[in-house]
Image 1 (cartoon, rainbow, N blue to C red):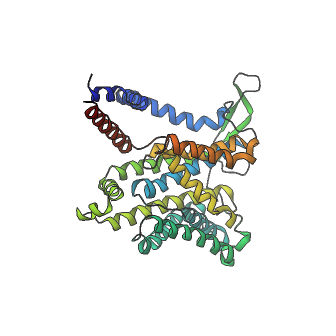
Image 2 (cartoon, helix red, strand yellow; image 1 turned 120 degrees about the vertical axis):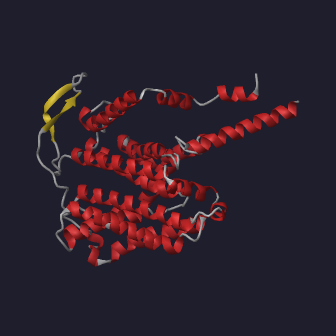
Amino acid sequence: MSTSTVAAKRGPRGDAFKNRVSGLPTPVKVVLWVLFAVFLFALPLLNIPFITTADSDFGGVLFTVATYVLVALGLNIVVGYAGLLDLGYVGFYAVGAYTVGVLSSEHANIPWLWTVPIAIVVAMVSGVVLGAPTLRVRGDYLAIVTLGFGEIVRLTLVNSQWLGGQQGISNIPRPPGAELFEVPSLSWDTGVPVVDLDATTTFLKFGIGDFIPYYWLALVVIALVLVFDILVKNSRVGRAWEATREDEDAAELMGVPTFRFKLLAFSLGAAIGGLSGALFAGKAGFINPQSFELLLSILFLAAVVVGGQGNRWGVVLGAIVVSYFPERFREFADFRVLVFGLALMLLAIFRPQGLIPPRRSRRVKKADERQAALEEGEVHA
């Protein structure tokens, strides 16, 4: 049996599953995607044992997870697609949240819905302002500059009384809604699922005590961002990002204006970060500088690295891992950092390319293994 045949038969199980799913008829795939979307929307109402967080509101936890997913998708454009190491991404998250806070509560009374596009534009302009002078440096230098940006934003928020200072901004309006109908939840108290008519959620009512509508809103936003991400990644822009990430000098020689595309990636990532911050401000109703610590930026980057930078579904999984498990196992809160560090170490050893590495990385790894097998065969011969 030839070496190539052996290598082909040793393919990862994930590829076999993916090929099987890809071979399904299109109507079947559409039905599966619809069922999966319905499941995601119904998840906070199902209260599935072992998944529901007993020590904190499950709808609020799911909203936090959705926020991390949105942030990870934005940061993946910068880190995964364009290959730019950004350690200050929380700065754009803060810019979006504070733009909403300032315009809707602190210095004006603009409705929340109108402040969201303004927050996106302001965050995007911030990305251009930061990226224009700094994207000419690479690697560690760029990481240091972006790290400084995140800290400068936080210190500005702390020391600027115009932005609320240490006290922050309160009474931020919530998203506009309507009390359409009540949706009951399931109860598992008897061991079997029973519809609990006493525990209901008002559809599209964005209030204080029930965070499930915020989670639904975040899911809709994530779906829109995913569509945008797929379109951009599969376009000429996505190919230019990939060429720049693999070898910037070679891409420049081939006529790719690398700086322009890096700046575009930086601004688009910043815009999605600002959108995430706007959602957070609308749900929380109160923001202060402590909401945008540097640790948050590290967690955002960890979500991308853990999931597999460059793979949109990988970073979604990474964001879920980073944000959900600490909430699910709050009883081990004192050991969360230790467990998280050990998990990262194990991941670095056994899955250095992330939980779901991009297809390109898997192809390169296969090619390396095939090359190594061929060289070993020549030695034995």
